[in-house]
Structures are given as structure tokens and as C-alpha cells.
Length: 391
Image 1 (cartoon, one colour):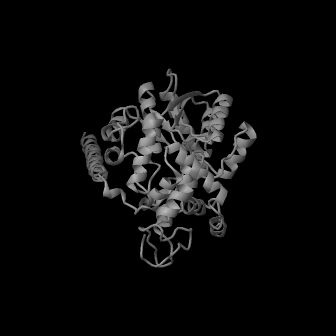
Image 2: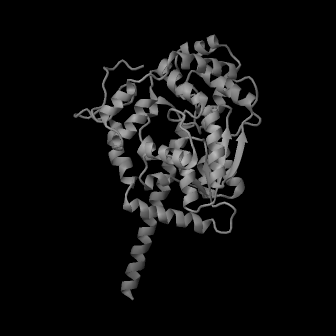
Image 3: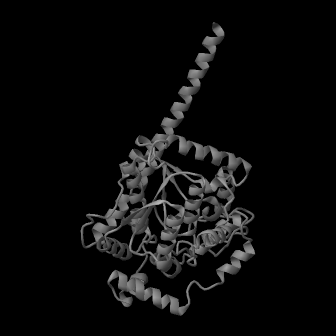
């Protein structure tokens, strides 16, 4: 927890619960500033985006011609992935839909997945993570006392998705991530779930059994083999169109009988407990603040509306008691033991081995090669032009 004076952004509602937040002379935070300079120039909910989207769809179709699938999508039963699945089908693409069952699905999420794939006529590949291994890794992360307790789920999801893509020879991964609803998320509130060194280090210290079946992706595959050798590319079409979550929910409910589950990423029982109780209680992080701030900077909600939303309870007493009992039973521990985990002193991800420095070095190397290639290309064109003029 930071000892700095409390301050909240004058534009969005991000505050000093983000230990790394900064403010300019007008009280506007760095997240808002980055949205304007780093993200908004790459966000096209307009006619230009429509043109770029058509080109993207044509490219996926063209390069997937003759294959069973021309792209792959992850399907959780949530708003973003369900809406994206509907649009991908509407665009005439042929996706393989992948769902990773990490053991925490709500019944509503399962029904949404079944309903969407059936009505859209999509092939669905489901990977069921070995529960005893997931449980052991989940408990290891609880014992580690780090902030991002969604790492076991998230790593399994993306590892399985990319493994399916590689197996099927699918180049394009269609992602539902978007700037309209999730442009702001403080780095200080978590850590990269794809850092396999971080995952295995925590498990080695606190786990009790080997992870023989748990889906993982190592550093080489994730950063080099998949993107640079196989050429796998992540596409984010929701950034090339108007996207409003309330409108998406209405569309899904009206056309597919899809049902909402009550909060961002709450399609997972664990994520609901993690975001609505573990993080606010143990770390003081309320993820609604980031989610709502994303809507504010995207002009989908006023700052005043966001502040009013923050006044609502995360849980009723009955709901919290019910989720505590469910999570504890699922993990094979008592509610008292679960509460003891939450009460233990917090730790930072850097308290454990990680690959962050390695990733930064790799990015510097690739940036150097890109710059060198650009200079060589320009030099080649200059020489070619001079030779042409000389002749």
C-alpha cells in the first residue's frame, strides 16, 4: 500500500491505489494521457475502421482458402468473446472456437457457450484442464500472496488456444480485447500470466504435485516460435468498429438468448471472487475502477456515472458467504483457511523468479533489427534511385 496522499484523476476515476499512477498539472492521470497518445491513434470506430476491417476479413479469407479453418477464437461465454463469435460468423469466416474449462465456469457461462456455438454452427474444441493440477497451482498462487491470482486460469487458456492453433495450422487468432472497454489496467495491479518462469517458480515453491497435463507455453514458443516462425498473428477487430458493451449485451440477448452474468469476467466463479473480494480486501485494488475508467475515456460513460457505479456494493453479505463457501470447497480447504490466505502479508511478483528482464532484452534486440532493416531498405531505395537517374 502506498503512503502517498490520496488523489483521483480529474478526467477518469483512476486513483492512487495504483502505486505507479502520475498526474499532470491539471490532475489528469498517465492512463488518460497514454490513451490519447498511445491507444486512440490505433482505435478506429469510424469509416476508416470499416475499410480496415473489410481488408482484415479479406486477408483472413484469402490466406485461409482451402483450409478447414481460417482463424481461431477463444470462447468464454462472456460478452466480448460471444459478440465477437457472432460477428466472425456474420463476416463469413470459418473459425475454430476453443473453450478452456479451468474448473471455475459458471453454469450460465456454459449455457452461453453451448447456445452460441449451436446457433452459429461453429465447431467447438473444449480443453478440460486436469482439476487436481489446476487446484494445486491455484493454491500455490494463494500461498504466494501475489496480486494476480488469475494467472493459472489465464495461462492455461492462452496456452491451450495457441496449441490448438499450431496443431490445426491456423495463422490468425481473433481476439476480443478492445480499447472501447479495457484500455486501462494498471501494471502495478498484476503481472503477465504468460511468464512461464513466474508460473513454474511459484508452483515449485508452494505446489505439492507435478504439473504433467496442465497446458503451458514456454518463453521460446510464445515470443519467437508462434509469432515469428509460424507467423501466428493476433487480430483485434473490435478496435476497427463501433463497440459498446451494453449494445452488445442487448444484441446477444435478442438474437441468441444469451444471458448476462453480472460483471466483467464474472463468467468464472473464481474471477468473481478474486476481483470482488480478494483484490479489494488484500491489496485495496478495485478493478471496477479501471473498467469504468476505460469506458469514461472512450466516451461510453460520464465520469459522474462511473463514480456513482463505484458506490455500489461489490457483494451482498449473503453472496460473499456463498462464494467463499464455494471457492473453499472447490479448493479442498476450509473457509477459515481461505480467509487466512487473504490475511497474510502481500508480496510483489518480483519477489519470485520471472522473465521480465529477458523479455525487455528481447524487445530491444528485435527493435534494433527492425530499425536496421528499415535503414537498409531506405539505403537500397536511395542507391536504386541514383542508378536509375544515372542511366
